Image (tube, rainbow, N blue to C red; front, side, top):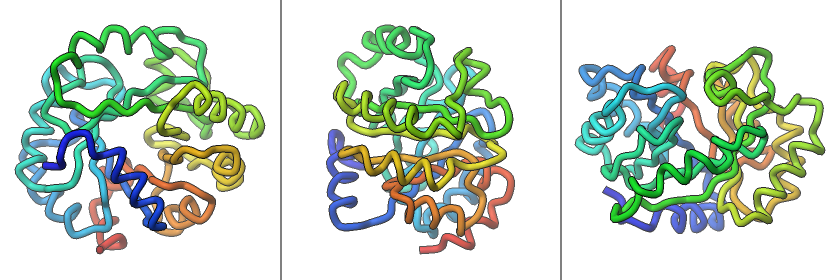
Amino acid sequence: MTNKKEVYRRVIESISKGEKLLAVLIDPDKMMLEGLSDFMLKLNQSVATHIFVGGSIVSENATEQLVIEIKKHTSLPIVLFPGDVSQITKEADALLFLSLISGDNPEYLIGKHVQAVSKLKGSNLEVISTGYILIENGKQTAVERVTKTTPIPREHVQKIADTAKAGEWLGMQLMYLEAGSGALHPVPIEIISFVKQTLKIPLIVGGGIRTKTQLENAYKAGANLVVIGTAFEEDERFFDELKA
């Protein structure tokens, strides 16, 4: 297991070295524990640097059970990417403390965070403040339905960049541009590039990336860490294209 309180520091160090970071997102409600061993074998042979665990809607206790099993198969840092307070488990290494700054639902701006404090007290989870910006991708996503918020239209590039900068000025440590799980289109490279130019903090990009070319384009545009989930859920052979 990764030493506690070091996930964010190592991200910063990796970025300073020009390294490309890749997180594989595993949804506890979609990953069968029986098939986890084979999945993790392929993941460990890939260029993945982090494992994110979470989903918009997850069954009670499913996250903790999955994290415990993942730890048996890897030394990569395990980071919670929670859709709700119920997905918090001390078994992970770190938690993205996501604030949905692209929406106007107070529950996902600060409400859920207040609820999480009692669960986080006394744990060794590294809590990483993260601005979360949902960008329109061509179809409604689970994030949109669950949070009852509207993504920022793709053509509103300046608003997306200004929202990201506002999050940075509010003290957030990471900024996450999200097209959503199963997105028809990934975040456009023009948006990634424009947002990156405004920020001094690391930029995460996820949603809709299904090919190695799309992955490389996201890096070239300025993404420091790319998150891929659905592509691996639909076809584990994608790991073959990303072998270390």
